[in-house]
Length: 364
Image (cartoon, rainbow, N blue to C red):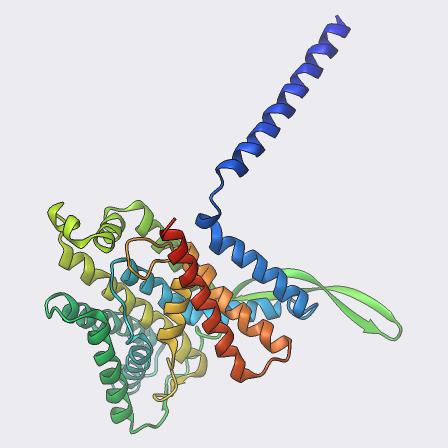
């Protein structure tokens, strides 16, 4: 009885091992490297940065958390930009819009809303609505005005920046409400890690806590929401359909103009969120500097994340990885002692490589 039991157990184990081996072979046989190029690139870049910046890149974790926090501002905007580019458009005005929306919001807070905590809540609501309206203006020019997205948003980019510079007379706009600066630089929860300190000739370990900053939480929450919208709703399918082939989408009874308009409103909303977080962090807005080149960083994050510039295809997860990859590249170059003048060149090379990879994959 025991021999037969042992024999059957051995056969079952051998059968399970063969199934596991066959499953692994089938996985690698059917694995499409082109579909996972962003994730693979992210892992390889992280390993390279860890080697170049060892150990400062990884330990203490403050460095990585600062990278993600700094990229959260452009990353949040890139989430909205993903919808715009998938739908076949582009938005060059997001950097100037950020300065314009943030500056007007602080003006409203100082002039009309008061100095109470409730005034900050009203200012936040006003900022989100105003940013969405600015995005609507871009979408209206593209859909109803029938202006090419590049030209329309290039024009509004100049308008937004000029208006806030004229309105503020190029001076900094500071928030007078002392509660306004509380949420931007704040944190929520923390994770523990071992901190090593040298006392005399010995190393001593003690537990330390790394806070998770509010912009990171906002970035991640919006990424989850937008991922669900893009992949699990009718609107998300319509956006992909319009970007892939607008004429076919129109024949399918899709309201093409509305589907192209909404992504610009979403982008205006994400710009307002980023403007709130950034202006709260510094307790004001610098009209000539806030949002400078953010449009390039947002577009770069989307492209590096695998979204096709011709529209019709893209992922929110890829955009999140693309935004963080840009931060890793900058941090790695800083830790390696590379000149700041060459950092933009490195970023440009990464963008070109991402576009070339997309082109090669689309022609296979």
